[in-house]
Amino acid sequence: MSSSKEFNWDNFGTKGFGEGYSKEQRAQMEAMYAGTLNEITEKEVIKGVVVGVNDKDVIINIGFKSDGLVPLSEFRDVASIKPGDEVEVFIEEQENALGQLILSRKKAKIVRAWQDIESALENDSVIEGLVKRRTKGGLIVDIYGVEAFLPGSQIDVKPIRDFDIYVGKKMEVKVVKINHTNDNVVVSHKVLIEKDLEKQKAEILNNLEKGQVLEGVIKNMTNFGVFIDLGGVDGLLHITDISWGRINHPEEVLQLDQKVQIVVLDFDDDKKRISLGMKQLTSHPWDSLAANLEVGSRVQGKIVNVADYGAFLELAPGVEGLIHVSEMSWSQHLRNPADFVKVGDEIEAVVLTLDKDDRKMSLGIKQLTEDPWTKGDMSTKYAVGTKHKGVVRNLTNFGLFLELEEGIDGLVHVSDLSWTKKIKHPSEFVKVGDELEVAVLELDVDNRRLALGHKQLEENPWDTFETVFPVGSVHKCTVNSKNDKGAVLELPYGLEGFATVKNLEKEDGT
Image 1 (tube, helix red, strand yellow):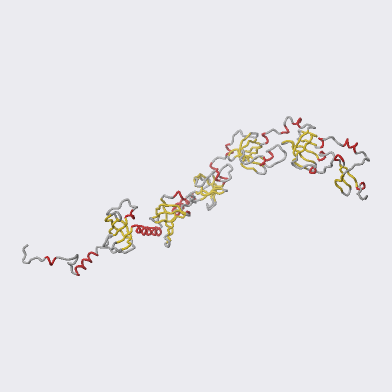
Image 2 (image 1 turned 90 degrees about the vertical axis):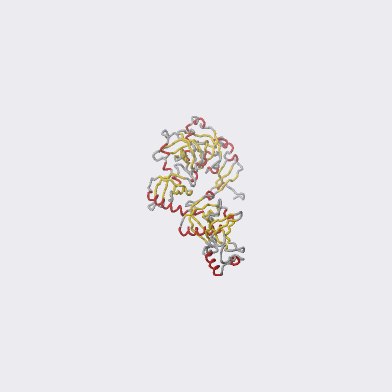
């Protein structure tokens, strides 16, 4: 190197980094360097770029004087994290004890989630969330990583009976309330449905007319009918309009959430009360009755109702006939229909009257057996003098009615109960339900009359009494009763006699 002046290395050498600058040069250089760095604030969310990944941490450059570290565990939800990826982080500390910049992706997600949730509330926007689990009174929905509460009443417009079917599924919701005190978020799915329903409701009500056939979903059940959701509009399907047949509760033929076809029967002027029908979609069963059904036909059916006056037999759903209690037995003594049939019995009956126009018929079951009065052996079986046993069915002032067999009754006059005792009322001798032996005194088949006697089972004792009790004979007897006129005395052999007052004497001789 040719120079008139030799180069001095001592003047160039330095002992430490930056020592070769003057104070003014150093201040200038620091100012230039600081201008390339971001001004950052703790506890804020900022975007950064991944510059390195090791076993434990992800190194992120946020344009600060030093890079920050985020634990690798906070990136579990990311398939792979690599240098160059852009991520949002939360600044925990600008410098910890070791002089490191501490960042958190987890907290950044939470802060960003709350910002998004508040924005959704302000803008009334729709968010997609994931139903995580069921809780008391509703569901827990994950929105942006925050657990929000979806009350059971806000899931749908119709009552929800099984919350579990929503768990693990995505659902669109709206934020309806934020409680910052306990970081509680309440969301609703129902409000989204209601908006759609309002349009449907208006459309349905505008086009509603009688006779219109619609499809609906059973929303609620009561013992008097079911409420059907027609798409935001509710209508009542009364129990009597569900089926042509008789049912005791809608649940016998329908179930909740079932889709059904119904017809509009009626509605009020405001269209607030809508009456619906289901049976009207099918023809009346009376119209499809067999053409050969007539009076005298035998029919098969099931007892669907038992009343005091008779029972109703269902031949087919919607086709019923009344069996009056008087047509249940040939007996003249009406009994309770429940003695003959009960609900659910499947029996045979005979058609007595039939009116297809008014859709009415009366039936009988006694007609399945022969009328006992018309049997061929009647005149010999109950010939005069024959003896029989029967049950006392009724008492009157003049006698009692005795049932010898079902449908065959006879009268025992009060005077035919005893040869010896004077009976004023049959209740002195028997009571209803007692069994009594009798002899036939008279038979009139044409008029269905049978005269019976009880005392005729024995010989008339009066022929013998003439010799036992001649005038002037003395007998020991018992006083049965006494009145102002005299006394009734019981003589031997059960015979009764009457002594007037003037023929009576007390023990003291008076």
